[in-house]
Length: 97
Image 1 (cartoon, rainbow, N blue to C red):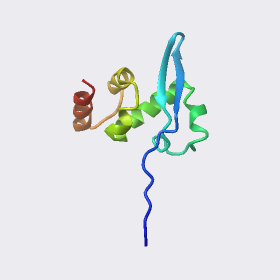
Image 2 (cartoon, rainbow, N blue to C red):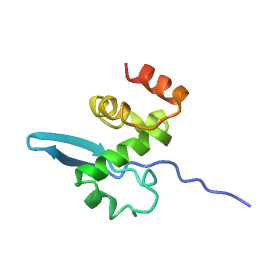
Image 3 (cartoon, rainbow, N blue to C red):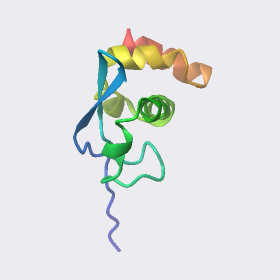
């Protein structure tokens, strides 16, 4: 029997206003947050709190090819607040430097 795997797929980007005048553009990648469907995720990512949680989850579990799609400055900013294993934090710090 053949097994088909679906790889991580970028469904576009969403721009979220974090504060007045400060915007971040993040990729829409289903699977980083468990429950939202691909059609609902772009709407959710317009909320600054959801974008922060989404980015923290991406830092915690996403592969480097996925993380490269996020703005580097935004990942660096969220890295300090993310709950990561020490080895993962060191690796991401190295990759983002």
